[in-house]
Length: 195
Figure 1 (cartoon, rainbow, N blue to C red):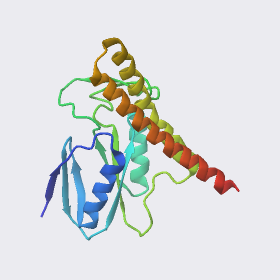
Figure 2 (cartoon, one colour; figure 1 turned 135 degrees about the horizontal axis):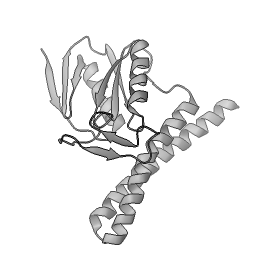
Figure 3 (cartoon, rainbow, N blue to C red; figure 1 turned 60 degrees about the vertical axis):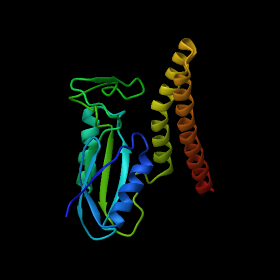
């Protein structure tokens, strides 16, 4: 019997992957992901593992190439939105993205900012990033949109003198510092391994 759940995680990547893994442990496999909808089918408990990957900074071609790479090594991949934009023909400006991904429209990567990656469980932890250099690079990638949001909200908040922009600025700064702490932790582990 299929199960449908409605959730919105936004940019909480770890929370989303933890939730998907808990459902897998209870015997549910993801078969479809919509804006709010997650649809599951029964499976053996713990048969699958999930990771959520941020790809909003990639161009459409690079994101599709990455998806094909993941599928070629045996993973199932679902695109997922990071926001709840229910309009047609919208665009998003991402100054922190790579060339080709700066302007996102509905025919490119708009509402395809995340990848949910599924792997058949083999008893080993599921990590898409296996080297310390790659983990550090990914932390820096995750910091860029939060840094932009922090700076934009701080500037608008200063000029408009409204508390809502201050709250957005502080929230963005907290997330930015969390990724900075993770980056520092990965750098420290990398140096310890060198010894």
